[in-house]
Length: 539
Image (cartoon, rainbow, N blue to C red; front, side, top):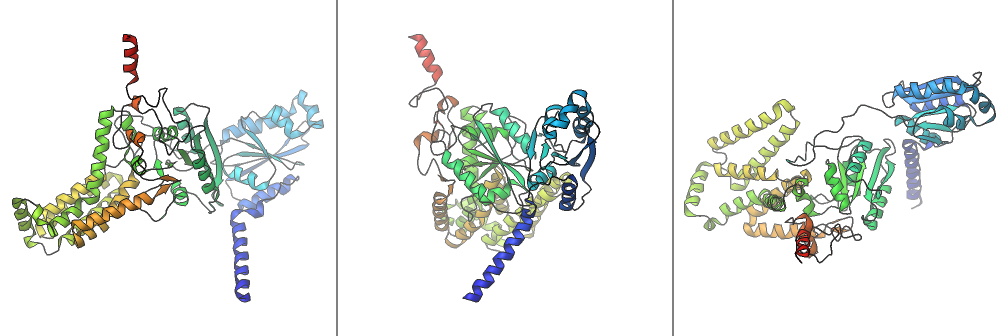
């Protein structure tokens, strides 16, 4: 036992040393008062990288004050550094009214008051914060004899900008999507919600990447318990790098072993703003155009931003169509396999004769036939995404037509199976969220196996097990099947159907537990307020 403990102690100690080396704790020390020592440490930390620019200069009346400006080329606005930092330090500190103050007062304070015309200025004294800020695009000013530094916010780099959404398109609605810049994304949300209660909390995650992550919520509407849980889960993340919001999504989700997404993501600012108004919490990650939204529930993945821009009847029809497409994409091949294998008596006689004649020369059972077609279509779909954009769509369409026609003529599959698989594939694209479509594509195969083994009884058992699994899921403490299980009558107004906007007077009960009412109406008001106004006028 003693040997085992010794080995564990040595392993833990070596692991801690490696973690310290990765996280940069060896640089977590205060700045030196000697300028040369600070510059040498910067060069040592970045390995004399040529994109880290260090500009030494003499400032003051007779050049007796030595300063250095440090910034990262490509991440910093070099024109602003030259025009508003270096030029001001070399000229403004030589003015007659400043000369005496430079001799008698703190040179850093004189710079802040008289020389620096930049909006955001922050003073730091530890080397790790200093180095992280410089490598993030800030401009640093070091003065010989002072153990603190100024950080100027002059970040600028090439970025994609605000473009039209590519994954979540709508016919009617805004045509703007998030970009890879987290500050642009927060600005897009603030354009939608101009309220002082829209609060933003920022932090850095990743020992190496130090990725900026922000939490955005509406104070007074967001559930405090959910908010605390989000903070707690983000604080527990200890990883060397965060490159996309998918890292955060996987690390904070409630249950890992499920195909269903429990963290919602969107590239549309109006969708995120709508979620914030319902009491949800948004998580923004620098470097990705997809923003996370928690808590997430099952019905949320069948809702599109366009549902609220169209009339209530049109939005309800489209939403019902999505639910139907969900079941078609999930059960289409399975029902065909079960009926043609075990329950032929359910088919009309003419259709049964037609299917039997088609299967006359097919050497494989129905399950193998369906599996071959499903796997072939999944390969074509993935190839169409990865191929060059100029030829990807045409190759996938031509490939599907040629392969399907050739397979039927060769007697490998029946024409009916090609029709069923095609309808199933088209139905899977109806889902407005890609993550839910992936879950359906995965679950389709085990349900097909159950259908080939037990027929419709197998499908029934699979659906019951699926419902039990969905009932067991939670997203940040909120049941996944809300408002169906538990059943909340008042929240049915925006579940399968969407009632008119004047009837959506309350927020989801289990998501926002305070400031429930979003309209200036009484909770028991079941009529259009316009009608009430007319009745009052008539009286």
